[in-house]
Amino acid sequence: MNKASILVIALFNIAITASAQLRWKPSDRHNAGLPSTIRVYETTDSLDGKAFRAFYLEADLYDPKLDVYTRVGNGKRYTPSQYAEQEGALAVVNTTFFSFADNSNLNIVMHKGKVLANNPKGHYLKRSATDSVMVYPTRGAFGIDKRGNADVAGCIT
Image (cartoon, rainbow, N blue to C red; front, side, top):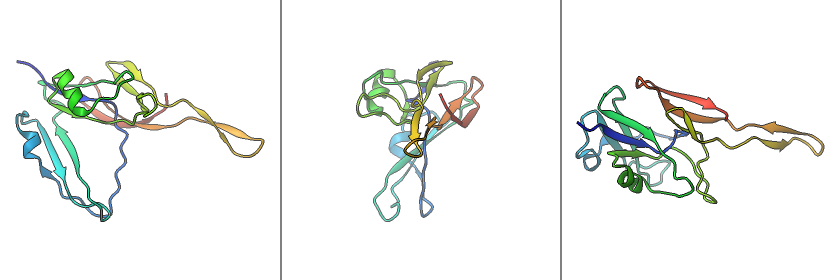
């Protein structure tokens, strides 16, 4: 039997703020054909008085039939639908920022211990006309180990 596949394009760096609790409901359209261990939810509630639509995916990471993996565009920008078609994935989660200048990922991305993309490099921050300090951006990272345990951490690369 083939493993169900979820393509995680890159690692999470998400910050969500809301003035009110959002109401989430299962997305019948997105759940059609998915195994019972993967569910997609959506909201169309307004956020701060503005139109808003968002999704989240819930998956049983201990399901032995589930294969979660990462990909980067290698200088090309793909939509989640294009990744799904290329990879034959059941679901695609876009989880990183990327540069519009060269389409590179702006967060660390790893797959099976290999670094596919790094966080931005350190840069000098001017504190005064004669003083500056090296600053290393810390970004959030989402990962899943070989046993299916998920973790979120800050990282510098």
